[in-house]
Image 1 (cartoon, rainbow, N blue to C red):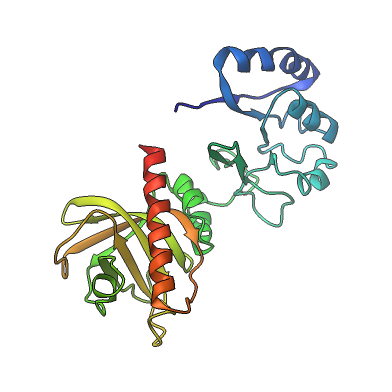
Image 2 (spheres, rainbow, N blue to C red):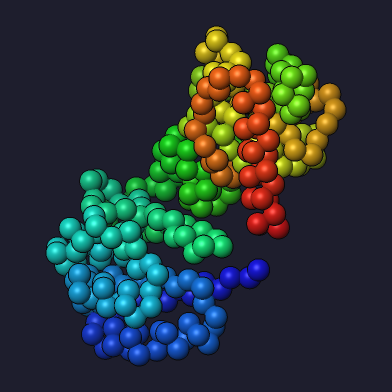
Length: 277
């Protein structure tokens, strides 16, 4: 199914706000818009008030974004802390109130809005979005990091020989990467990934962590359960792209419990790839 997203540029001053209130809902109907983002930072000329933010929302906006004039009206600071749909730039420096990233649940789909601001020609000190992406990865926010980077975060290396549990006891062929101590990896957890081995790419479910159900040595591994690939892959060059976090890593009471969860994770991964195909 095709979903239309409507993005509306700067709403400037009271005339712009009144015009938005008049035309936005008819425009949404005309375009079949399922979701609308409006930049409202200049509804007061410079900045916006709480009342103006609510008027933009009532006019039909699902998300209202701000920019370098985000705090042109000081009163908006406390309001930013209380509503999920009002987004200041995510890479705003310092301890700015509010947030710059939000997931909106539309029932059939979820839409993540990430508000970023560039730094060229602006003297107000926005953070570089790339280190910010690293921090998001450390929290497991693979999708948001991909939007900041312009591509999915990935790690690569030779496939290492593991303990053989995946294929022999868990019915899930795996490839294992062992990151060195200097390599950035996402937060421990289970992810939907795309794994490329010897030029062939396919869907996978990847566990990042210490595998507490089957290991006791505490060594960190990146273990990918391949959904469509088979064969002896040891020593081959492997690339793992992180697309979406499914759940945190956890310890299961038995291998049977782990096997059932691996099956559920595989179903979730297949559903993810089906949703983007």
